[in-house]
Length: 314
Image (tube, rainbow, N blue to C red; front, side, top):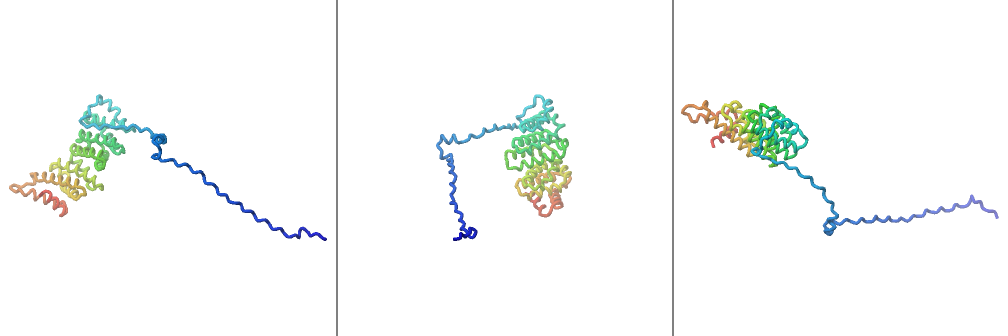
């Protein structure tokens, strides 16, 4: 019997691959949850806590009143290093130097006259500092500067330096932080008392239209103090119509402080106006009142003129 050729043999069926059983990977062992400090016994709770880093020792500044500041033992030697100390990067050292400026202004004022412009710039820079202690010290220094040099401050310092000083004082007086606000108000009051009213009023005039209503109010208070120091001739030099327009605009201001300052300005103006001998006529008591009404009518809109006339008649 002939053998069959292997080439003609039926192909054997191929085995299907076996499925490999999927073995679930066991989950990672659970990390034991650290109990909250409140759940631990008191002894272990203390050991688990990390001790906080030691607190830095706070540096404090003493705010001496002007009456408490004593003269310097050697003002000439202090002047040799004063500008370097004022330009220091150490704010504590700058505070100390500003207190020395206060002593110089109160007891050795002649030494400061040549460098008033530099001192004003340093004071303005310190007022802008985020450190309240440095800011307040600089404001106190400005108060003593006004006290000693108010009569010549506008003529001996650069115009921009004084403008920046005035702006910063108005901004600081408008803050909510009483720590700084009250000190800035004292400085503005000293400025209005000590500085010549006419040039100062010209500086304050632009703040009648300031966007910040609090700045307007603080400027209005300073303006009313300036006007109260003026005689009729100085008022005429500034411009009676301009003064009336400023006061009339502030009468409609948002804050009561500004409105009250405007009423004070009007009373001061009317008092000087009615006492002006050039506006009076013999045996005619109403001539000053009529002249005042004519001035209001010619300088103001009808509604504003009525408001101003009403204040004087009260």
